Length: 311
Ligand code: HSE
Image (cartoon, rainbow, N blue to C red; front, side):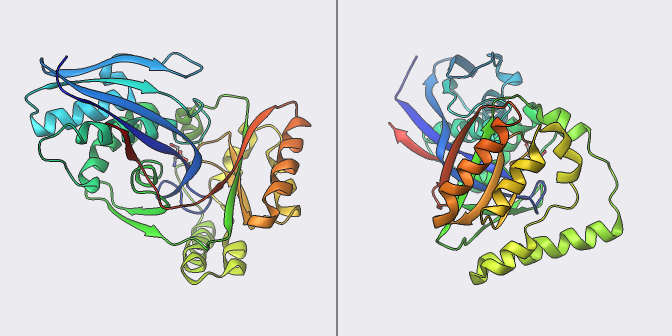
């Protein structure tokens, strides 16, 4: 073991945000993963420990999201040293809160601090994407990009991704309710149809454009009217017991919109701050009526992404 150790924190994220499948996501302030990294004398990536998770995650670097992100980084940079990491999972596994992405992001941010010449966040994004692919079976960025950059983030492109932080009206809060069940992202992606009706494409395109323009212009009515996923949510709702009742509980208590966080099972709702507690209670109760206990948070959507927290 050589050199200093650094610890990075990467926040949980809401992928898709309803209208932006695989391209839009935002940070959740309340929870996240931490990765401690240090240089080692020999080359290669080693995972020393994983703590905090409710299931066993692989310690083999190539099979672990954080490990694979670093394997990809070390290979591309031909690093003359090795890296040993310890992962502390704060995000429940299989929750739809971007846990695999957060571990990959925290790993590359921590490792970056060990480099003689640190890289830009955009360069780190590509390595983290390789890590995320291990967990979900495909390369997508809607969790990675916000966890890395912070806030509501749109990503365009995969091979040469471009990211844009979208402003969010300041009094908007996100209510998140995570029912105690596991949903595999791979499975939630496998069930999706590969084709889309033209009318649904038009509707969803309008909703994404309306949602983003509402965010830019502080127009809550536009956000509310656009906050509808007509393509993915109808296909995944059946995977989450009580989803319709939970969504109804949110919207009837003043939510701007409510949908599935990432691949689920966490359900999220955007709302004005003063509605947040009422919406949280109603959503939790609706899940309880379907025999599901839950964790729940109310989060601002601030612009703070992954960062070094100890060095
Ligand atoms: N956009 C992804 C999905 C997020 O919905 O499948 C989960 O990784």
